[in-house]
Length: 396
Image (cartoon, rainbow, N blue to C red):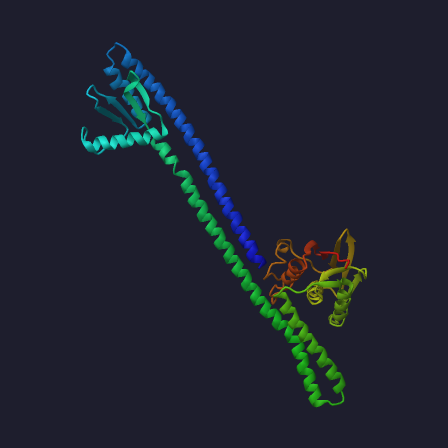
């Protein structure tokens, strides 16, 4: 459920990012086009002012128009239509930098030019060169250059690129999410087999003893009962990790004392490892005993396995800070390599050749997702490792 919410929020953020990016592109593009159009308008006005002066002057301006102005307009690559009203009320047209496939003085030509003029007048107000009694006799209509028409498409190309990028990010996230889930499923299956293996082997051994040795029957039955309860606890662990357990007041000291008592009997005899507990007996949180036991069990087990010398120390201490309880688990093991420090809580990470990398990721899930706490690696070197766990204190 949490991963789904994170994925949904991520998709929403990415969608808003793409929309914002597209809006920004359109805004910048509009500013650029408006600036180009302004400069184009100024160029046109400059050219047409000269043309206007020549038209109204008494000089013969035909050569000037043909030899100077028209080549200049063509060089600027500005599509332009000169519309002239004739004495009989009809219009004649001259077009520059516009390819028209229809022959002049045909109905198709006139219809095409009039439609072109309407399109041009949407962006640029026509310039009047000559008028009589407020009736324009000669008007210049002009439109966007090829460069401006090309720039118009840039935001759409960028938007398509952003959408493709968004789709690739979502697909990548889904792929990573599926891969992570697969690692969790595989790890959970292996962890279940590992957890069940020890009590099942023990039960089988005690059953053989019952068959062949009637004198130790009482001890065998006691151990069988213990291992059966152990199996029950394992079942409850995996049941609770996949559901939302009911949290109640838990004394952390009691959880840790039970755990240390359990591990002191199971530390390899070849090692002299001391587990120290410096923990006030009144620190309480809202939690689940079995899951808290499991999370600290994973931490202590990792610390024991990291101690390669014959002697080692695992120190568990705590202090209160406002309404927070901070717990530190320190050991003098071999530590974690710098390149691996960011990976230790991810499913699949393990320094052991036969490990499946689920212990610390489960611990993180139990502490952070279920108990709303926080766990982080505060220090690690060849001299040891220190982890900090933070819970909100409970007074009721």
